[in-house]
Image 1 (tube, one colour):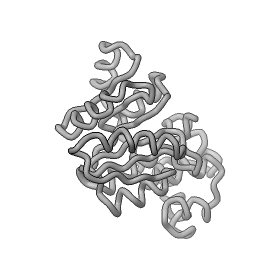
Image 2: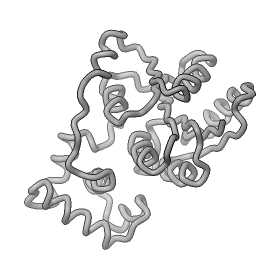
Image 3: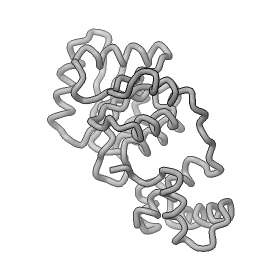
Image 4: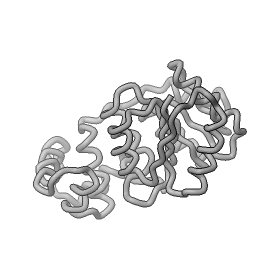
Length: 210
């Protein structure tokens, strides 16, 4: 299988790579240092598995990068590999239909177990949250947004203070297209002005948790 490791700390990436090289079923390992690079490499290489960090420095956190990748790359499975163990993170991962969730302080063999599980169509969530509580979270109905994936990204980046030019650079679109998205969003949500983006983003968990 082909695996993409996404983490902004190079020592962590190299450590995970050394661990994965032990397994004969992993044929190729690719590395990305931020969310934007992860999206680009995922589209280019079509990895079977992506091990995704959550906290990254370039404006695209692991959740946002994962959502984009899942919408653009068919059959790729994503496992979040993070130190965050709070329920709000796990709940968001479930809502985004991410395949796996594993803590960075897990045992080495658990990473390979997680990879095998998600490749076989299962979800692998190993956290400190009690099993019964985790089952309830997974059974909860996921609310559907009236906004498209791209529109949600525009709302999020705008609420973080990104200009149209900066938002376009992050998403690979022109500033004019960003402005068109904003107009469509305001019409869909009946927003009076762009200052209400932040209120909507906070209410719908589109702003970074970090």
